Amino acid sequence: MSTHRIAPRTADFRCEKKPAGGSRGMVVTNHPLASAAGSQMRLAGGNAIDAAVAALFALTVVEPMMVGILGGGLSHIRLADGTHRVIDNLSTAPGRATPDMYECLSDEIGRQRETRGRENVVGAKAVAVPGALKGWCEALERFGSLPLEDVLQPAIGLAARGFTVTPYLSNCITDNAGDLARDKGLSAMLLPAGSALQPGARLIQGDYAETLRLVARGGPQALYHGPLGIELASYMAAHGGLIDQADLAAYRTQIREPIRGAYRGFEIVGPPPPSSSGVHIAQMLNILEGYDIGALGFGSADAVHLLAEALKIAFADRAVATADPAFVKVPVDRLIDKEYAAERRALIEMDRARSWSAGLSGGESADTTHVTVADADGNVVSATQTINGLFGACVQIPGTGMIANNYMFNFDPHPGRALSIAPGKRVFTSMAPMMVLREGRLRYALGLPGALRIFPSALQAIVNLIDHRMSLQEAVEAPRVWTEGGVLELEEAIPEQVAQELAARGHRTIRSPRIAGGMNAIAFEEDGTLTGAACWRADGTPVAISGGLARAGARFSI
Image 1 (spheres, rainbow, N blue to C red):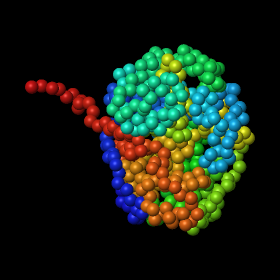
Image 2 (image 1 turned 90 degrees about the horizontal axis):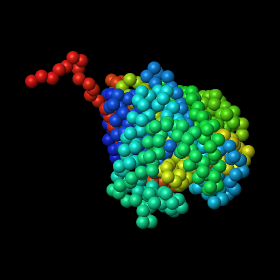
Image 3 (image 1 turned 120 degrees about the vertical axis):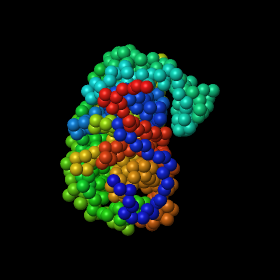
Image 4 (image 1 turned 45 degrees about the vertical axis):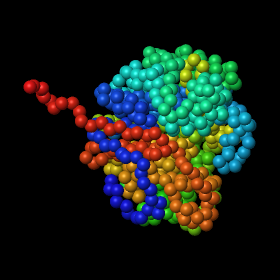
């Protein structure tokens, strides 16, 4: 797509990173060593699925604050034949979980999930039944081409030999030092001598290397029916957690059909509930389609106002109507209907910020990682995986190196709501492993971490590409905004004049140094080449593969 700007940019910015281009493969993750692990699989003859799974396992080592085999997530896979699959390996509430298991402290927007003692954030009671390991292994078995043992080798090597701590990882440790210090294993690993590992230090995870070797030999059974599961269940029993071996044995992934929306001639494809992204990105794009967003200019007060109002509408509907479809009847068709969008759009006022309530009724984290991978045969993976908050529940299972998720935080701790806790219920998520097509041909695949800020940020990247005609690098690095109905967060590159104009319309604005996390993306060019981009908000690194084998029949002679 052309990078021609169809309107001036009120918020101008300079990209901090450069894209990569290749013809035979692209691996983009939020850590260079994970991108290298994925590229290694592709260079060894593996496909995009092999590369994505290798990258995810490597990320559990080099991004321990973001992702782990005790986490969960979504993998949006487009196969070479053009079909799409969404592997839902999100975590579930334990069988002994109850709607009133936490004591709620607030019902205010932005504080609804606060509980006494932060029991849904830190500690064993915050841990949901993990789905990551099963989901990754099933993706590899169904759609990959290499054996699990080969795919795990890069991660095992990184854990056993160690790697150099980046400033980003060091900052994450520093920011969570208080919670990490409560766990003996994490404290010893990440806070030696009582202070955070510094950039340049070497982090070796010997116990975790042995855990990965066990998985390489026994597959996911090592956790769901084997020794790793026994260790997890024993820890839970001793520390007030609810997960037992029956929960692990009963866990199943789900294969889901994606949600498809239409926007200005493009097809927008994303995950269905219990993810909010596919439904609500389609809904918001339907609302925005009634305006000439490009002509308003990127970062203008009018453009940001419309984004904010669309976000507030989506969050209002999301709160009552979108959850695990096995427990709540989700009105998907109504939410993505263009006539419903027109009804909501008609209530938007350009000169005044509104408070929004749901327009329909239903059945009543903060950190993640993302990988985007493509091969030359047409296989593409956009996968968002997480242990939810930074370092999950700040719990490491002794002797295994595994860090537990705090996915119970994603549930509404108030009983009687669409997102309330129920035994076996899948956690709700904002993950947005998205793909964008034009006339049946894939144009973009993208995603990012960032808890509730994920799908609004993915929406903005899509608008940047389609309406503002940005390059891929610009689209992922552009300043973002976010609101769920309370304050309107603006990244620092949004001009102060725009902030003042928004305040005059009734928006309560605050400045944020970063909204959501490091986005990574791939653009599929008309000549068959691939462009990969990662943004400044994380250690994201695109690795492109070109070239190939010698011409058929070629010989060497002197």
